[in-house]
Amino acid sequence: MPRKPAEFGRLMRKKRRKVGLSLRELGEKIELSHTFLHQVEQGRRAPIPRSHWAALVDAIPGLTRDELERAAAEDRPLALDLADAPPHVVDVAVAMARRLAGGDLDLRTADALLAVLDEETATGRAFGRVVDRGGKPVTGKAFLYRIATGSGWAALLGVREQAGRSDGPSLARVARDTGKTVELMKAGHPQGGGFFDVPGGLPLGEYALHVHHAGKQEWAWPLVVSTGAAQRDVPIGGPDAAS
Image (cartoon, rainbow, N blue to C red; front, side, top):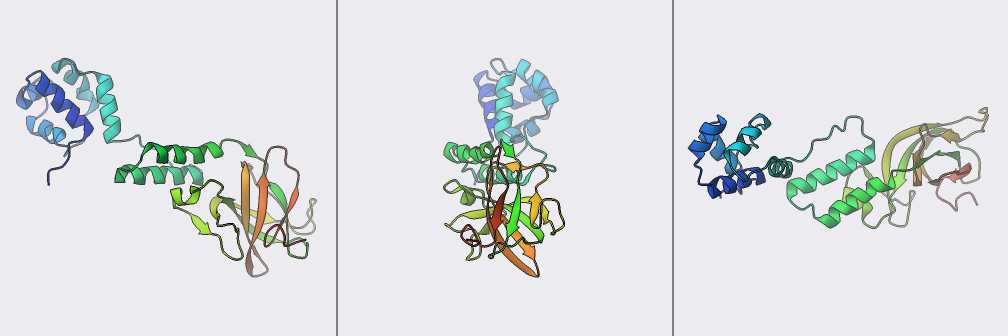
């Protein structure tokens, strides 16, 4: 089955044919093999090197560099260095890349993915105290998860999810790993036992903590991060556990 020409090659062929220029003639003008140019037009090669674009524009009247830029961008979207990116940015990048590769990144999906990033723009101080079902402070370590709020938000991303379990965030929502871990302070800490303060804060929203203490792993939630928030207890087992 013939391969569908990529946008750059399709554009080049359309403009070349419009002015009656053969591949061999074009190759001589821009100093590239006509065989190579044929493969570019068929989508079997990447767009021609940028060092030849000026000659290409000169060789084909009516072709502009802006058109080449747009066509090259459609064939090979901008590469991003995600080495130091926070988890939610990596998630969105991976989700968009998968849909680009599959050819199903429609405008609605793209808007929804970008909305995830919009949720993360503002941050606030994230601190509080984890307490058990009897209201006593818990010591140990806690892993922070963002609780999904938008309809279809977690399914849209599909990575680093931990589905709600009987001992975790309920209401059919999903908790997503933020990549941050905190120590829950012991009784001698100035702020008291179970206290934590997340370095750098967190994007505004609702969180759950996966608490590892006394040989057990339990969920504590909600931790609500907002601007000007006061310290609040985060109960093991949810909002009704310590009442």
